Length: 330
Image (tube, rainbow, N blue to C red):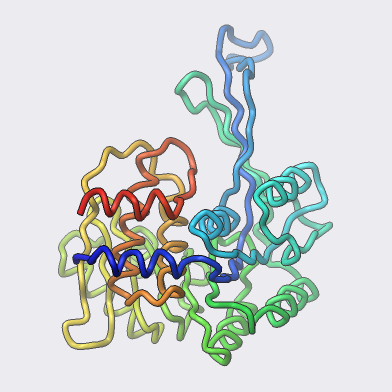
């Protein structure tokens, strides 16, 4: 599709100040960089001498950061543990000027943390600390109460599920019911476990693998993609389904006649696909909140996802990068 410059500027200006709740599995990504110069005398493993370490948001926290860098106001709702990783996470939240009031410290769980050890350009090992148990009913109620306190100020809700236990079936149902009652946009980035719990939302955004897994199929031909997209639309009663297809771009499904649109990926040099899905759901949601039509929002989201794939590591999209690049390439 094509945008006029005036339409792009109108949407860009409307991004500012949109308040979006991001509910789901908050994560901390840790990176340890160094060199291998010897093998350990204790076991036949490399000894990595660390030169640098740094921390980034992962999971739903990265979605909140993307909303922030796009000019919106994220209101993240999630869980951290009472541990050192939780303290690092809290510091990151404060450094980025993001509201911390939606977080609950759960004494019974660790902060979900992915630690990557990298020697030179070689990823040596990843160490995960997490609990996949569902949160208890008390914390479930606390999260819902925090959302209810903010609901009248929200433009949209993003449900970001990584199957780490925050989005329980009951909480999902209550969030959607509340959002629908208040006429708030609800978008979903699902994972396998609760896939079909997300009924009646505005946009349901699975990727190809997730869709293949839940239906037990392989989507090889375009016809396979079309069948799966319309099946999801019907089964979930979503207003729209946006199916991300990697290098093949995205497929957008709506209930209207001729309700399928394909948006190809802009040909780019792909350095790293990490975090692209977070960027897509963030851009899509804030664009819809800013008054973009669904096709416009899907185009912007697809474009943003392509841009972050040019970067190494999980890097959020910025509003200026997105709109300036589109304008330059028009």
